[in-house]
Length: 136
Image (tube, rainbow, N blue to C red; front, top):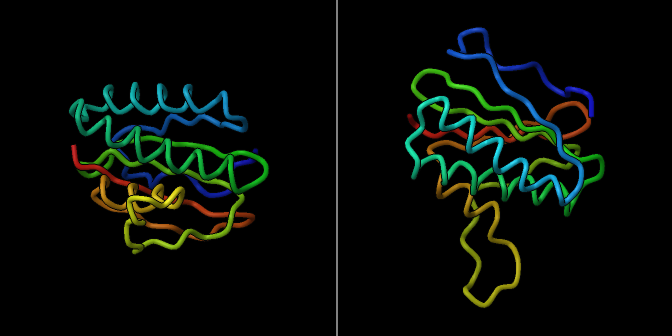
C-alpha cells in the first residue's frame, strides 16, 4: 500500500517505525510491533497494553470494512507515543456512546476513544488516517 500521508512532523523525537498489514494473520504481528515499539519508546507496560488494544481495534476495522489493508506508524513526540493507522476506508465517526452490553458489534471505536489520551481522524487521499496518542 503506498504511503497516503506525509510522515510525522520533523519535531518527532524519534523517527517512525512503520508496518503494513493486509490480512487477518497480520493482526498478531501488528500487535507485537506496536507493543515492542511502545516499550522501546518508554511507554509504561500498562499504557503500552492500551495502545496495543487501540491499534488492534483500528486494524481489525480496516480488515473488516475496507479493501487494501493498512499501515501503522509509531513514534514519540512531545511526551507522547503517537500512532497512525492509515487505511483506504471512509472517515471514522468518533464521539460515540459505548454500545449496550448485549450488542454484538460496534465497540471498537468507542474503546479506542476511551483508552487513548487523544484520538483524531483525518481524511487523506484515498482513505483515512486515525492518529492516537498516549502520554509517556
